[in-house]
Amino acid sequence: MQYLIRFTQLHETFRLAEVKALAVLAGVDLKIISYSNESPFCLVEFPSDDAARAVIERSILAHSIYEHWGTAETLDDLHITIKRDTAHLWPLYVEPSFKLSIDSYRGSRSQKQKVALINSFSYLPFKGPILLSSPDNEFTLFEKWALEPVPEKKLSSPLEVHFGRLIAHSARDLISTFDLKKRDYISTTSMDSELALVTANIALAGPGKLFYDPFVGTGSFPVACAQFGSIVWGSDIDGRSMRGAGGKKSLLGNFRQYGLEKSLGGVFVSDLTNTPVRRARILDGILCDPPYGVREGLKVLGCRDPEKDVRSIERGKLMYRDPAFIPPKKPYSFLAMLDDILNFATDMLVDNGRLSFWMPTANDEDQEIAVPTHPCLEVVVVCTQVFNKWSRRLITYRRLPDSDVDLSALALRKKQEDEASGRSADDLNPFRRHYFRGFKSEQELLDTATLETNQLQI
Image (cartoon, rainbow, N blue to C red; front, side, top):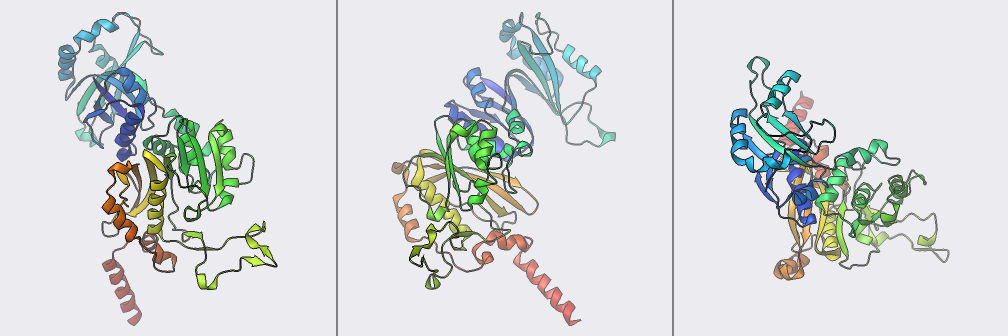
């Protein structure tokens, strides 16, 4: 059966990824018939209303889904299509209450025009009462108008029209429920509620699943996964971000705020390269937003110069057991961190488990950071949120069963493990280097340096 999804016109590259992931999670077949990032309307096929409802009721980026009754370029053609293709459905809706509404995308209609449009469907033999609130069936005429037409050349009719019967609304109300402005404890890097929930959906968070965030911070991703029924864990190299001020102003306080504390398995202080987690393939999903190393260089536990190692024993006492002990840290390669995330996911995820993490990159192709790969992980989808001169991508992988792994590629990777080179934060992080150069090309930097030299000589 054909259905019409009414998306929100935001985060366009995430929309299909979320819907496809939810179809996998619900175990239903989904076929995309027509879709464009430029339109909020998507025509799909589901086996039944229940299947369509199961997917959309978990969606964050969709508004609703409708049983598709017709699509055309003009209203007259739409009426012809409806009369030709849906007459066999009309007897189902003769007696129940109903409502017919207008949704004009990029356009507007006066009340008089809306009434005229509704009356144009008078050939439908519906005899039940018209209820504006909670009707048994709700039908909607969708209009897609041209983008920002010049006032004196305003089109007299929309570019496209659709008609359908409402099946289900989405879960977009959760965005408000988990809004960071209402949350008791956040930091400057807390992921906003909408994208945290979308990430959890794409990673297939669901009841009975085990999820982990190795850069947990204030817990945005674990909170989102817990909302969908998962049991969650987290860790962070900086324990202060998790502890906060205690009580409500803490990661645990965030879970208590939403009544999700029973879904929190626990959190602990650790970095990814020195983790106490036992390497066993038990996790259904790993979600994270790793540090980008822009405001300060990336760090991991360890000594910058092993030959000048700090003392581990002082006055006969192991220093790390001192409550005031602060472990030393050393610079960390951004690219090495990406590889470490993939290696960790390979060791921890169950078959078909998902890794979803955010990664920054420059928009300039010459400065773009390639999507990291691993023989044991298949890239499912790459979604992009574009800013000015840089973007951040949500990259999602699927853990391949061992029988599907290319063993020769795996052996080659292990043999050619990259070693971090350089000692400064910029040496170890190409994104940081480009960020502070304003994402200028090498030629632009050379031209600027030449101009400054000439000015000094003058």
